[in-house]
Length: 429
Image (cartoon, rainbow, N blue to C red; front, side, top):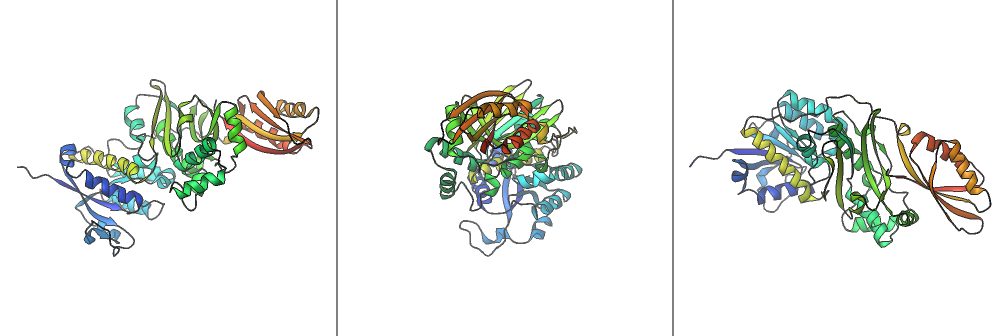
């Protein structure tokens, strides 16, 4: 019987995702020869403390020396699941320069240094795969690069952070406050001890930057993305959204229009009829519009050990198949255009605005006058009784340029009849 080739792999990091990758590869070990015609062996695992005992894994597999990996010619593929910028960036660049293929789940690194990494991979004829960097186990990078390559994609948007989606779901379905929902998310392990990257929108911002670059074939970095989080969303905002037949979601939205690319992350009111409005709890979903495809949605688990490992192992299998047929590097960087990214004030949206105004004749007319003078037309108004001194006014605008709306907000905030502008949330149009 012919001796099967063994592809030897190094795993950088052995936290939640690294453990999931090891577990999934062990589960699929016997199937690998049938799936890809070779065996796969994790030869080394880079960790901080190699003396720490890990059940079921031989101690000599662990190392705290990068040199032990980069100098080992038997290791042909490096899987990076350490996270962070450094030393992950240096390790990946060194691996590619040494002719080793790389699979990574590092959204922070790709959103900031994607061009450098992809250019290096191309220079040395290596694969750099990163399906797990966006939306966990949901396949979206490969579909956009391959299955949807015949499309001109004009819009991609999604719920790409499970923590914030869980919080907003609990606020909407169980009437929790933001703080109560955040506490529950921490108890269940959906939120980190420091949830800033999630609740302030930074995690989603990195993911939408990566997806926009691929969808529109033009480099978009994390620093190009306008970002707002969910920390200011209140029970009242959730209640009004329901009353209006809508739900509030934290969305990453990227559009390619004639004037350039719009890319932003912020809470948004969606019609409850929209497919994304019904994506609940910690699930993620990505909605794509292409000229040939029309609309498609990809939904599933956006985080966690095994969902993320699913994407990592899928990439690894792709790399090994390419190695077997000597075609590594066949799908590299897809950014062959240079399209400007628009500033937030140049983009347009509909807005939901909640104000506390003096409860007296002419207050509504005064607000409407300010909006009209700034070029903001009103689509809908709801006025609620207040405490006798102030009433609550809810305004939904028509589509308006962000800059014009912000001008109106500035003027309204300085008016004596306006006690406060309690909330401003964009509305999907």
